Figure 1 (spheres, rainbow, N blue to C red):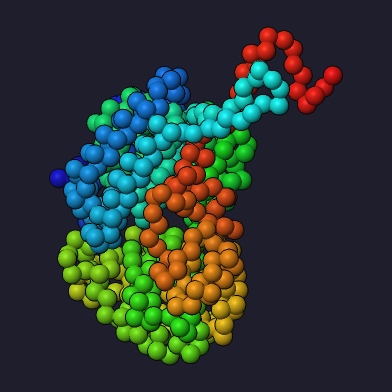
Figure 2: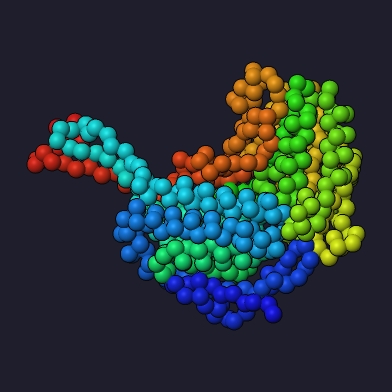
Amino acid sequence: MVVRYNNFIGGKWVNSVSGKNFENVNPATREVLHLFPRSEGKDVKGAVDAATEAFKSWRLVPAPKRAEILFQAAALLTERKEEFAKEMTLEMGKILKETMGDIQEAIDFTFYAAGEGRRMLGDTTPSELPNKFAMSVRMPIGVMAAITPWNFPMAIPSWKIIPALVAGNTIIFKPSQYTPKSAYNLVKVLEKAGLPPGVINLVFGAGSEVGDPILEDRRVAAITFTGSNPVGTSIAERAPKTNKRISLELGGKNAIIILEDADLDLAIDHIIWSAFGTSGQRCTAASRIIVQKPLLKDLTERIVERAKSLRLGNGLEPKTEMGPVINSEQLRKIHQYTGVGKGEGATLLCGGEIAKNGELAKGYFYKPTVFGDVKPNMRIAQEEIFGPTTAIIPVNSLEEAIEVNNSTEFGLSTGIFTEDVNNAFIAMRDIYTGIIYINAGTIGAEVHLPFGGTRGTGNGHRAAGQTLLDECTEWKSIFVDYSGKLQKAQAID
């Protein structure tokens, strides 16, 4: 029997107003796992009503007390880590080791962000006038909407939701329709931890059917979004009409640079993990390999050999190294890019096929794909594919490698392999991405440093690290004049 789940609005688990549902499907088998409500505008209105009312009291709860609830949530996530990881693998496909990492990142981040309940630091500064005190404090924005993707269905929501909660905001959470069970698990934990009714509201459904009413409701003060550039661009165009603050984390076209003095064994291990982990469905995936020509032949042969040997299969199987992609639409998109690459004159070195042998035919599996003879201006070297495809681009020098790296509309993550400390520091200075790894691949962010990118990767906001409160708080400057007389600033007579 397929279990049906509900929205969470005002502290109650309720079905959609229309009674409609959608299926949650295992991408490795196409088996229907669960049913979730297909929400519409009336459901969003109910959630915003609840969040608006809850904000009145939640913002007044002392921040250390708000944090205690979130610390409890982190402990509950820790207790149920393996259970939640298995359910995540079932609904989105990546291997169990990776989903365990996804849950662990949510745990780490929840503990980290909850610590702000006893910090949330502002500034104190001398006033220019006597007997006057000057300071700044953070205050919550109000009702915030968190719209999150399917590839990290618990880690990314934690980045968005936990800082907003500890800061005193209330939340409308709209997760991807492809990973609803992980969203349910996170909200269920927050409910059990003691979050008051209406502070977090979970609304399931398709993008526009839920997203449009969120955009149109003036009571939603801010939207934090992680996803595709087209959707992010639409939000950026429409949100100002209702005076919403927006935080966007969008695409990537990340590169690993391999200089001729690199440790090749180390580099190849990182390339395989960065290019094909999560079946390439990471915003930080290495979809370009920029290599100095003396290493080109050896590097190419070894990458192709390793890619061909990767074991595809169900993510719950211990021997599986790469799971399926998320759905048939993504499978078609990835395969279309294989045709684009061949049409542009790149050489298909391996993969480039939908896997149809044996049990793989039941799911959405794509063979690890490597292109050679790629020029920097080709579409496969410029556009985000979001699948297990990587392109090898030869260059002559470090300077050319950096130029190629910086030549896309995205600027999220770059890795560079070199044994020369001077080259490393030149790269750190001149590479224009939000994240740079020295002698490591393009993935592996840590929660205590800012996460985000430049150019088309977003609109300048960063998740995590010391910036984690920036997208969910407003600054308030406060002046206390205890002189007992009129004092005019800027030395006005």
